[in-house]
Length: 296
Image (cartoon, rainbow, N blue to C red):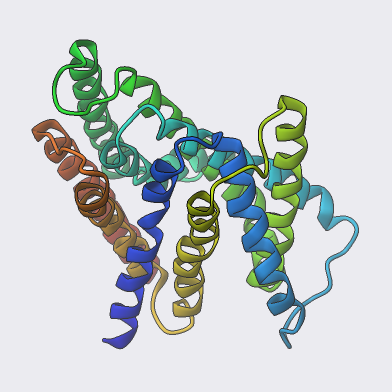
């Protein structure tokens, strides 16, 4: 029971990411992503180096790390940019489709078996996403209802692109995670991604340091709190089934929405609730089916 509560707490911590991005609306999204990844990597690196079970990274591993770092950079760049256009609720709901998008990519890239039920669940989840996206499109056209951003549909599309980048990143890095300590691999990956974003930000001429004390505070919280949730997930894998963690992550849109209402004074709309229920139920059923298949 204590590990289940710990996982729920981890989801709660992860849910702060979108809130912090919204609070940092005067800083360019790639700069936020750079600090999110770079600071976290520097914090995790000493921990990874002193792990007893660590395996030294080979020169050949760094090409994969570079590619994975580029993809995770693009993921955060797309997602953080999306939050300039769409709401926390819509964005986190679309992010929830990651397991089903991974299923689709597994079928396309590796010809992994795709059952009729899985295919229908994928369509159902995409239907839920379309409800959220079309609702945002309809309300943003008027731009008079609540605080729906004028170009919310752009944010929804960018969020889905962020999901695609993250899924490709997982496929590329899955063998590395099996061979190496997760913390060491993640720290090197995040530092690499931070450097990639640093070069990009310098080329674009973005402000990198002239922030207020409040903005620095949120940047540091962004690097620590959501990543602490990720560390909790990986620690918990020693004691619980991965499907439990995957299921628990579906709480993120709920926690994020509650935080957005309290902290950001966001509004919640009926179409978001309807689309959210469809997305969460379809992903939940898929996870349960996948768990049964593995056990059999």
